[in-house]
Length: 247
Image 1 (cartoon, helix red, strand yellow):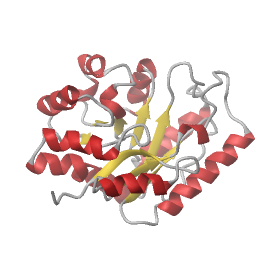
Image 2 (cartoon, one colour; image 1 turned 90 degrees about the horizontal axis):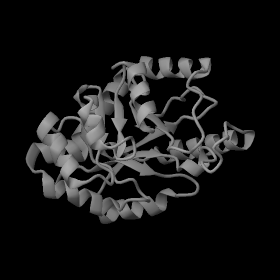
Image 3 (cartoon, rainbow, N blue to C red; image 1 turned 30 degrees about the vertical axis):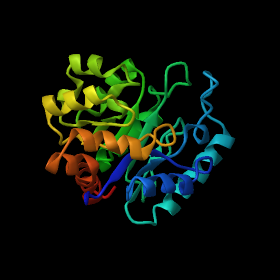
């Protein structure tokens, strides 16, 4: 298979070094992809009352610098992991990771700092990998209102569920994309049959998913231009828009 393969969903940082990911990518003949920090370097997910701290602010700066250094390699696209300081996104980041699970600390969605950053993200058309619980996912999509691309990871598996999101029309929006990391074959196939393949991104969720195995799901499901689009073409097209708008 000669297609360029890019993994759109991989964790990498000081606690999950690039060398380990790179070895898995090499095994699966994956040339690069999107990187964002492991959660533990961004916030304390075990403390529901956690908002922010100086130590975690330092940790975020360290891991984001690490990702920018890794991105000196070809086909590496770092995404900036947002937390409650709502720091402005430095040049060099191709997109945004916005992440929490139920029972984890909340984003301060009602803060003026959050509003300012969302306006910045939309103005720069930075794609957002949004992994949130169901109600917050819907509110976030409404708030950016098709002004930038929102990528729902795992085909919505950790955002309320694929069927639930589909039933209320979330995936009908051309500005809502999905990635295939750890998603079921039936969900990937259904999205492709319902909406086409233009908004599907291959992802592995390394280190929780195995990149070569996650790639095999795409090889088994798709051929030709659909396969090429999902494995890399769609991501390249999406990120070329970001580059053109100065992101």
